[in-house]
Length: 299
Image (cartoon, rainbow, N blue to C red; front, side):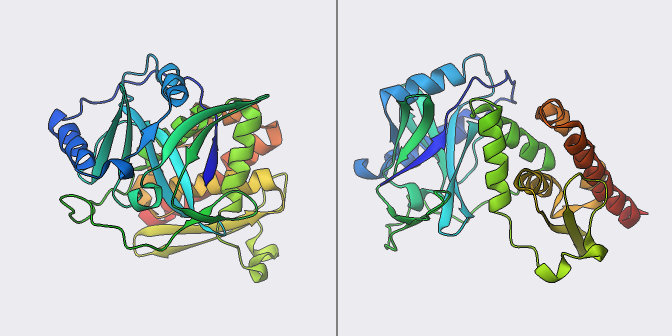
């Protein structure tokens, strides 16, 4: 079975810190130790597309293909540029282009082939995944067969890789770069909103209403120790997606992390220039609200 991911476009040139060659070799050795039928691969069309995408990007080592828990069916793909190599990564060489994945994601994509498909005006990266058992009707997520996969070579505990805010913003930039235009990016943002946990209907009241947005927005928070947990929703799909984007950056962060990150990423992602004035203002207002909560906690 297959799953589709929107098309990629050339990413911004980025210079990343040098990567330890020994990490790459260890990740490559772990991948080569797998049976040939289990390794990840890509077609010539996908390889050519990624070469064009990463041209001039000195920080891109290849494509990072992973999965995350998502949607109504279980998993969704995550794709961005591989800019560093972790202890639990596998590196698959594909005639000069690399696919990098982590051992937590690998069982759900074992043996997959990445392709680049052009159908009329639609261009997309396409994952031919033999492990898929079913996908949800909305096409946003999939389940895999419940099989006892053999252990990965030299299996070891997962490293703690919770991304920093800067890494999360960079990941969003990379994900946006893979989308062909702002129509696709708007859809991607709305898809993020669909994947948010449901906001309790009893909280969709005046007490929890966030004033400062054009659409109706409901918002709540709590401190879990020193980390801020956020939840919310909106009656407008694009606004709900923007809320999900903000929560991806700010939720489950300490006050110090939040205060160190202002709203400049809004313009870095191109949102300021492509949202209506009212929606851009509402987004900035929500950032300031979140930062004010952090300031109160830090005081």
